[in-house]
Length: 70
Image (cartoon, rainbow, N blue to C red; front, side, top):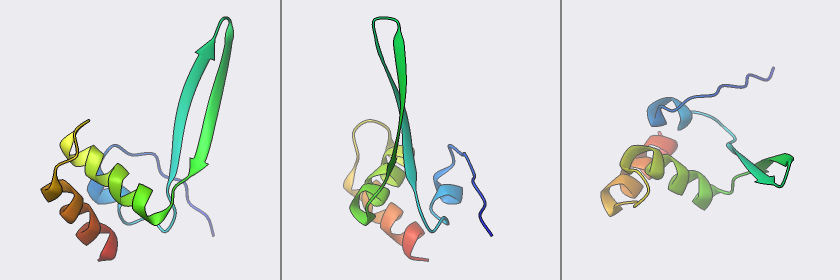
């Protein structure tokens, strides 16, 4: 069974067993979509970024680790 969820809520995202980052880039008239599976550290950083914004605070990183661990 596979379920894909797209969310901007870190509390929901942290419950997933795998995380993927989807980004888009454009060059001239060509647009590319990139999908990358995140490592454990990247997962923690991404959940922390969702909580604190562009600049990741130590508190957000610790909270992200706790959310992923539980």
